[in-house]
Image (cartoon, rainbow, N blue to C red; front, side, top):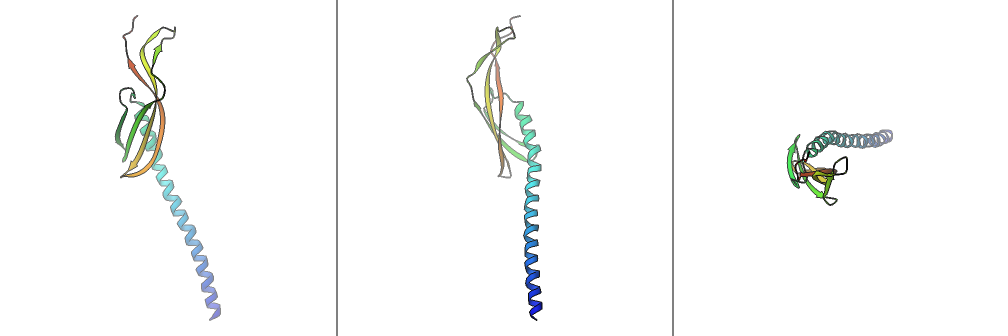
Length: 128
């Protein structure tokens, strides 16, 4: 009887250790799946945001690959006049903007990212 109880205690201890290891692996697998879904969506969001002109739009939101993306643009440096290669006054005004965007899925935050873009506005026609 005593041998049976000792065997059960040893078996229970080993089973609990294996369950803890298995549970940790499941949690790590779930996190890995989240990241593997988030990274391509973040790359798509960066590609989309790279096509906007932050000088014209300063904030917005859109849906992409099942994620809701909310973004804002903030001017980092004063707007400057562009120059041609010869140093003459260019046709555009340029500003450096920081775009911050956050992703969420069904209201659950999935992370936030930042990127820098140049905003531009044409202020004169070329004077060939």
